[in-house]
Image (cartoon, rainbow, N blue to C red; front, side, top):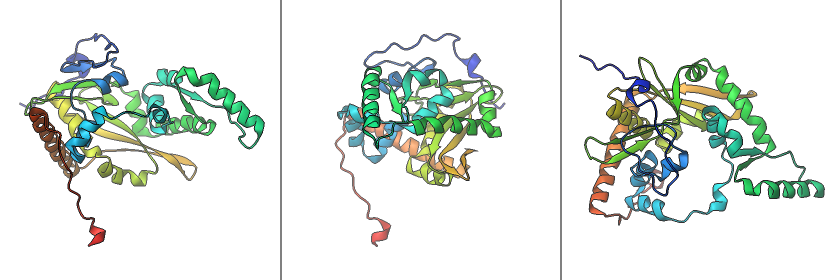
Length: 294
């Protein structure tokens, strides 16, 4: 008998307490709602971004855990983060972002007004967006809603920014993922929002940023926890204008690309497991001679 997909609304307890802000929150295997982005990234267990570091070199994974962070550089505006928040957590947008007025930096008065504005908002801890960026974002959001499949994604019942934690059935490692949106119903669907500078570059980004590995890990984590295999979709939104519009597309990877991503996911998870078991993070990466040098 074929296993029937499980609706997450019925597969998990109705009430999960939000995770408290602690230095190293412990997320036990389960389906969690109300976990902040900061708590998720600080939690124990391996994520897809961690596997990206392992794929480069296990030493890079250990470096990423302990290297100092230049806090002044982390507040730089990120259009992808802003669009992500506007689409998936609009109630948090004004708490996390502030749109600056359109200052005329060619005049002394404009420079003075900008300095006064920055001094006024410095203590608020918000990401400052330029007036032009603030103008573009609502148009990009409406562009998403104009796409029939994208609109369907947001009109269906679903859960945004949830967290799935599972113990991998092969390695025993604690793993975690944070789907942007899960559509519930007879067949579950995971949707991940990607900002891209021109949709023609998205295929390249799949390989460059290992989106196929994300597809594999999130799909596997959902299946290991819920016992149902979801469909995984990417909602790609262009931040560059083409014929006056911000292009939108909803795409699914073909089976061979998914299989390649799964192989990399399992390879990197096994490497992480072996390094963690041996507490061995001393690895030197061997460079590959580029093909153009031959």
